[in-house]
Length: 203
View (cartoon, rainbow, N blue to C red):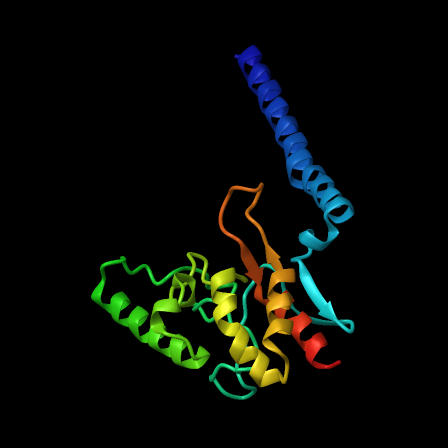
């Protein structure tokens, strides 16, 4: 009886010590080490890839945003615009509409969006790329295809008093190629492009 109690006590104490050790290692030491490495080696990414202009935070390279006329919900013709967002680019409410490709409601929404994008940019509906009328799975995609950027060039140039050639070069300079040379499609980060656009327009 006494031996049984003693053995149980030793096992309980060993288990408690193991619990305490694992709690300290995995709950304190490991997070601190990983956070430290992230801050030292990947400071920008570890802090949300925040973009600053003149010392002021204007957004994140990883999260899209709307570029509307101030105080309205109307898109501003001076800027390049991103993909539609089911969550209004709210990083705390990410997710797609969950509608299937054949859903009548989605088909209707896409058709209406295609017409709106074509009219806004002064191009035929046949030139409107898919990403201009469909949201990403996250609803906060910060990038657009080079095709979507291209159909916005003329409108942006006119609204900012720039030449088409100037804006085309801007898009080209801010187009990232396929990952590893073969994965995905060329893409343009809308925030970075619009920052460069403002700098060019302000000269």
